[in-house]
Image 1 (cartoon, rainbow, N blue to C red):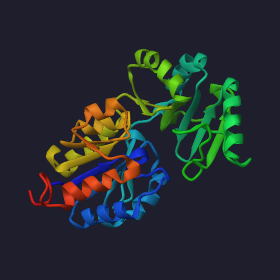
Image 2 (tube, one colour; image 1 turned 135 degrees about the horizontal axis):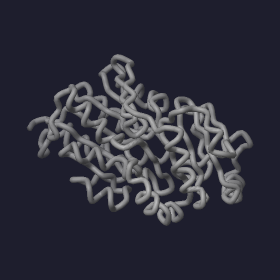
Image 3 (cartoon, rainbow, N blue to C red; image 1 turned 120 degrees about the vertical axis):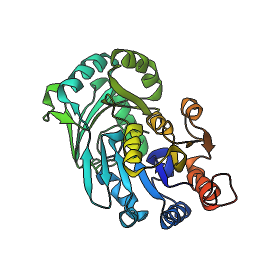
Length: 300
């Protein structure tokens, strides 16, 4: 019997409009009413997950957030946050100096803000996209998982462009990210992985690489919750589409990769769900959890 459902956000729970569909909300709330707990597992900060948790009534039913790829776990019932480990400024500087010749945009995330470095060589690409999308002047010049210009001010209102890595003002950060077009990321990622094997490095999206301290992952955070709550692997269902979701697959028998995931992610999951734009997660929940006739539904 399923007792816990853990879900990635972008490309998994959310559709292409960054929303949870009506049918998906209803299915997940029904699960909660049956006593099944929910976890939102994301690269996002908890403040950027709260609105989705509220939509799913997770404060009422006692869900949890695995935030910033496992950097912290937030208990919605008690409003308590456990920070596990952050990446240091010195570590970021070391990585920055190595990737600087690749002309990647780099971003250092902290609670409520981002300090980002943009090489002048990529500014023409950014400005070209701004013109094509007719973006307003107040739209941040900040790369995201899907484009050169991404608005994350709802969770990170304090955004500052830096022109030298020594301008970083904090001793520790939540995560460090690298962004560029997907072909450039693909070109340089192998050398980054080889040089910094002492970090957790994942390609969360085709144009986004996220870097965390060794041992910090969604999977390790999920395992911690499972051990604390006493869940077995065959009582846990996991959904994801990115490389940062693979570690969660390792701790749940019922692991689902979305059809829109890259092949490497699909290979690591036990099952494949339809695309996030086709309510794939919702369909699998209805089929395998809410329908007792299926192999591991509530009737088992």
